Length: 119
Image 1 (cartoon, rainbow, N blue to C red):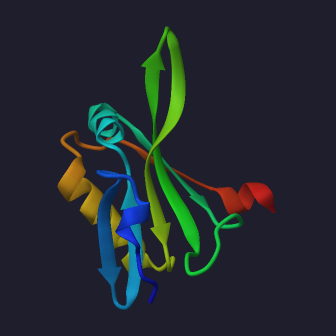
Image 2 (image 1 turned 90 degrees about the horizontal axis):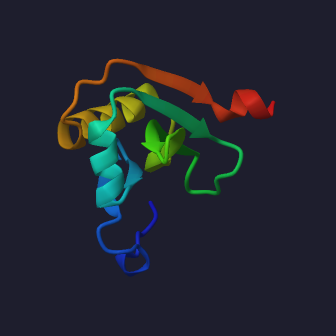
């Protein structure tokens, strides 16, 4: 298991440190990002596998469309550094996110896997 050095993480950016059967998942976001996530009516998830280094196996991110200056932009709002990609891991991350940060009911959660695009 790795050691997380909190002094290297900006204040307020570490949202959660989820532990699931010997694995860790680090959740990162700013207060503003969490606020925008709570306001979003739809979320979109993305998993990037190719660009991450050990001990992590995936950067899992949750995005939403945000209106800015008359444009609709898809913005990443929450990042999860995951050490495993099992069903139990995704379930724990989803439960923590929904239980702790979402005031709005998620109507649609789309999933796009970056590895499918890269292959």
